[in-house]
Image (cartoon, rainbow, N blue to C red; front, side, top):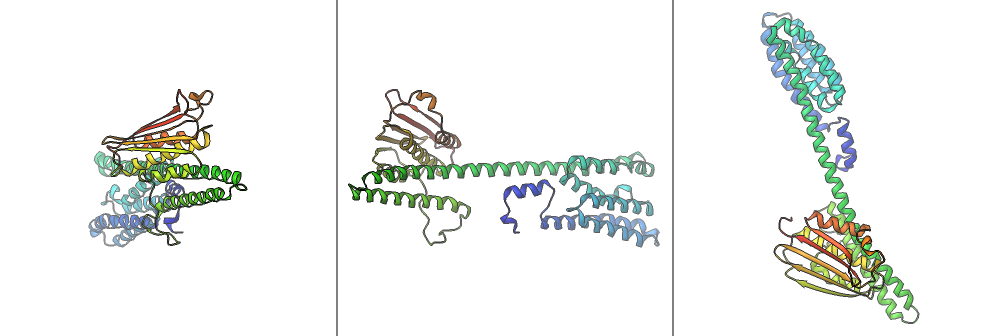
Length: 389
């Protein structure tokens, strides 16, 4: 299966199990094998010059260590065991090669194992690698033993650093995925909730007048068709975010314009089609707004109008005011519906209000919603322009 088709959660699980991509595994093998052949191979040729009969066996042990590194990615513990045994045999064969140098491949394997396996496993491997320390002390004195222990501990520590770095990367990727899913969920909710609310009201109106006024029923049905097409266009635009390089979809339709305050009149017309009177007032220039602020303001107005249609009992009029200056965008949506009993307690309830507050907070703004003393419900938002991207 192509890696590009894997779900993010599958990729995270694979990394958590220590599975490396094939290309990374090959690069790790070639790099570590090259290091062992260059450093340990040179030491063996220098130290074995005076032991001609032992040199071929020593070279074979070096090649065996380099070959065992082939299993670094899939079985680092096996690579560590093989390299430790071969390294000890090489050191016994050529004592002139220090124990630290003879176990170089094993130290590389310990580093990789520390990075890709749980700490309890790598701690056991670290303890096993420390067992030959007395041999290093006996052969090289205190300095030789200290150098060996330092090399082993540094190899394990380097693997732990890499493991922590990978954990941070996975956590950041998970956070990005969760935020993107939440953003898509908000977009889908805003598009679908608004369109379906308008369509339900228009369908009810068409049913009421279907017999006595067929023309009004047809107008309501045409409005339903227009709203549905608009919603489908916005959903295509949203889904096309996964293919930002595609200018056309499979049907050859051109990309629909993105939701924006510039389309406020279109939004108001969909609500007017239900029989609601909508007043729209603008102050300031809408051009040049940051895309995130523009979209957030549009969606807040859309959700506020949807809530008016669905929840404002007796409402037949709603006012939308948008004021733009150099510092911020202010949005106010006020209807004339009946104030519910205990209205102040209901001001913060509902997924729609929560979504509007989240949108405002994401761009560094604030939103307040609640019933008015004289009746009706008001939604106000203040979205800063400076610092938005």
